[in-house]
Amino acid sequence: GEDVEQSLFLSVREGDSSVINCTYTDSSSTYLYWYKQEPGAGLQLLTYIFSNMDMKQDQRLTVLLNKKDKHLSLRIADTQTGDSAIYFCAEKRRRGSTLGRLYFGRGTQLTVWP
Amino acid sequence: NAGVTQTPKFRVLKTGQSMTLLCAQDMNHEYMYWYRQDPGMGLRLIHYSVGEGTTAKGEVPDGYNVSRLKKQNFLLGLESAAPSQTSVYFCASSYKGQKYEQYFGPGTRLTVT
Image 1 (cartoon, rainbow over the protein chains, first blue to last red):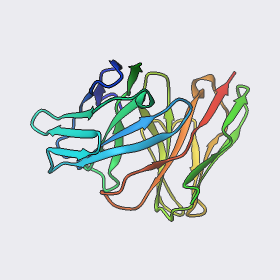
Image 2: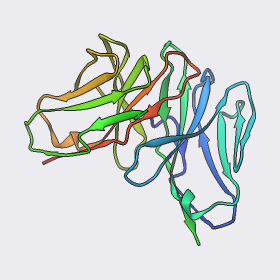
Image 3: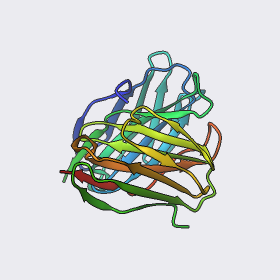
Image 4: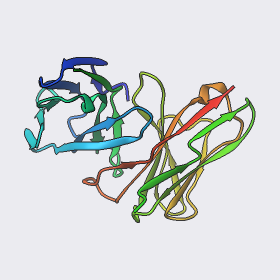
């Protein structure tokens, strides 16, 4: 998972926007995902983007994909204290595998201050 | 649907003991996976299965064995536990095919002393 890079920490004030960034490595990756993990819980799929798209919006979430730079970002509008969690970026690589394995970043701990 | 369930939720083992973690899914998924999560790390794939009776190694398979005797169950075994296997273990499952996402269980926290 160390080939997918994310900053480890982000702190924002409630009501502000949060932007979590990720760089991935494989240009053949088909899907890129954002998962959320709350304390003591498993991973919950937040959203994903197919590699032929450059933007996807889903309510408060906006995903931007820059394939040239292999850069993925997740913007959370009007961030709430309930958004405090660890956010994982993951890429589904196709090269050399029909399975499409997921490779995860280390996760970004988002802390939202009231 | 219960989704993906894991048993047990917590376990403490002594070095050298053995145990089996059970993962079950009720979504008729073909693919199943075992990951481990260590502090400050992303998830790393231990073993996976693309169907009943088939298993394959992931990134960090050493010290683990798996079996998929039934489509809905995927078992992870530790034959002789070591402190380096202290971790949180997640099971996941998905439909066959590139476009389907993985669904995760709640995790098993294992401590080896």
